[in-house]
Length: 357
Image (cartoon, rainbow, N blue to C red):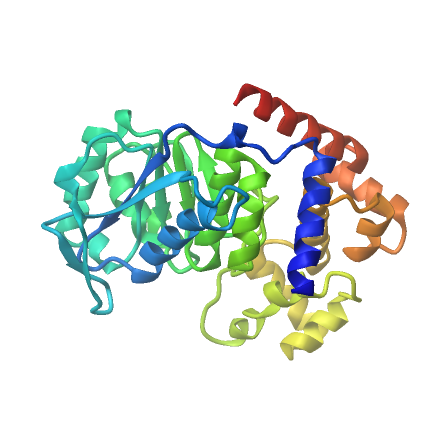
């Protein structure tokens, strides 16, 4: 109960800080309709992750009796499908029930390479103009790319698929080092935890932090912004051999930002000699260990500036900067704004969004 009290106190302070009063002004008259495509060979984790994240938007907010999203699982053929690993899923709706959807989600899985993948590509091509957002998870990018709608756009991809997607679709800009990307009406992520992170970012985009934050707390996830290099993936490209030793490093770095994260420390964690560590790290993360750590620290600092009332000095120390001046210089170098200016701009944008809503 004490823990709940602490969360409620933090939540109240946050809303007071950004000038948001918990009222019904953010609640839509009509919930946004979300369609999740189900087909033989789809990844069950993609389907369930999206479903639970959108449902959490209303279940744990101040407005528990209100519905922010009407989420429908749509079987692409009939009213059932079998997932990639043999889970049989029955649905109330099929794709033939399609009417007006705000958002369509296309999961990955080996089914995207079967005949149904081509049918999905054709369906998306025929209906995309009536859909505000098209969301692709992992291999879900294949049918949309086959439709031609992604030509010239940037997409996030699972590290294991990145080279293949780039080879098949030369007009795409494929980024395997970013959790999730928004490019116009197209949203993409590699999979795993990035699925829920992306949905939470979409909830914040629709209704602001007053709805997204309670859902994030319930799902034990952070709200992260859409971005290029600003939103580094917690899983990068790994192959067999010594690279496997780097697999846990991104998550470990994120959990130890306030500690000494020198090359020697990271090399010891990965059980690799410092000289060899620097080479393989740069090869597969496409940056040096020092720059990666700095970017991770600044990414977390940006999140705290936006969602907490902590002082800039406190945030600088919490993310691992020994001096606030060095933190300010690094922040301005990356974001072209001082930490204080970034916080003020975040508050201004949130107030403008609420007024516009």
